[in-house]
Amino acid sequence: MALRSNHKNLSLFVTYAAEVEARVDAWLEFAAGFPATVSIAADAFLGSGHRLEVYGDSGTLMLENTTSDYAKGFRLSVGDRKAGPLLAMEVPFEDAGKDGRIYPVSQVADRFIQAIRARRKMTPNLAHGARVQTLIDTVRLAHRNGTWQAVSPA
View 1 (cartoon, rainbow, N blue to C red):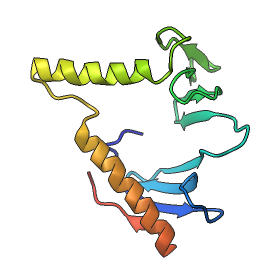
View 2: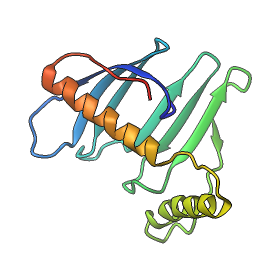
View 3: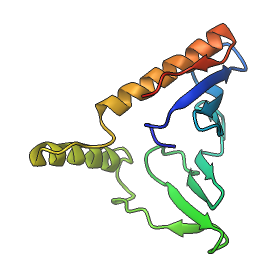
View 4: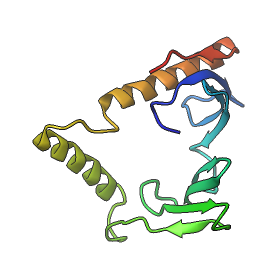
């Protein structure tokens, strides 16, 4: 799912009232007609970690982190009809003993700096970040109104 994808409708269900937004279950329908579900529980005691699963006609992609560190410890697995089972892909990461936030943030900052120096566009960019905020706001609106919300194309 790319940030540039056209989200057609968004809906949200929150299971309980909380002082902070720690959980969300959202249902999305893309303009192309395929559905997506999102389930996030940032406060789940002994939760299973972070996992993004993408299923398509020709293959599956899974990005998973079962550690308590939300920035390092990710495994990427890919499977297709030819290869069969999910196969782990190598994801480079710096020294495991350091703060897990340092390496990913340094990589993003370096990409921005390199793009500026080369005078070229970078993706994702700040416009993509603004689009994500629009989608988050639309999910909140769907929850408040209890209805599906249409999302304008990016």
